[in-house]
Length: 293
Image 1 (cartoon, rainbow, N blue to C red):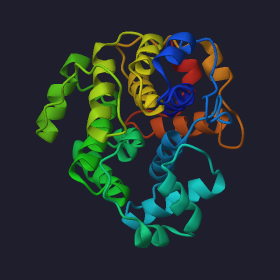
Image 2 (image 1 turned 90 degrees about the vertical axis):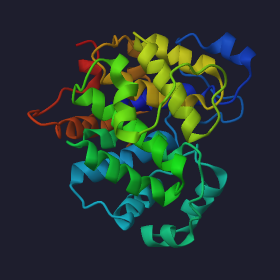
Image 3 (image 1 turned 135 degrees about the vertical axis):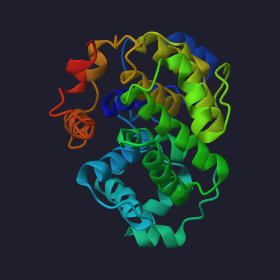
């Protein structure tokens, strides 16, 4: 799940808010593409995955979830591996602060953008919906203390939980979300996706519920335009744990993903540890082995 999210992030990063012409010319699943303006991140994941890794580490390490522990982890993973993709002001703030408490003291968490949702899918591994909702809200309010900042993150985490715990067929996903959130999520998104939590979730759910192959879902995520890395990352993370979706991503996407200190091998190992949290699951094969099972 984490690995596929990173792949979607890295592939989508080459298309974030580019022109329709560039999308038509380059979105062919042939290789990771360089963004016209951010040329150093080709084949590298962005803030989306880095913050998802932070939450996955908290779960695996068994650390109590508090505002401070989550904020500490956000600062920790940023400081150890600074990378592009963060909103300009948030990037500057993370550079400035030295601790989670420092972050909590200085941040103004009034955003309705999709930052709280982009990182939320690992929380779906928790064993009850109540835990998923509570912990997702806690982490969301640190940076996105708004209704849609919370609700969009909860929708993503609940969607991961739905698939991981085999709660039903994917056509039942939106009803499941409505039962728990009292929000009706449409699945007919078309057009460019803005950096807003609500709209991002609508686009992702549309892709996952209507899709049948991961490769096609990824291409369609990019074809929408707009915030391509976030939409692609979330769509692939959720699709990777949906048994109804064919795991047909090309091998090169796994092989050519960055593999530095916090790259592919690190993510594969963390992925195994995270998925081992599922009841009755021991050691889990890496995602690149499991993807066609």
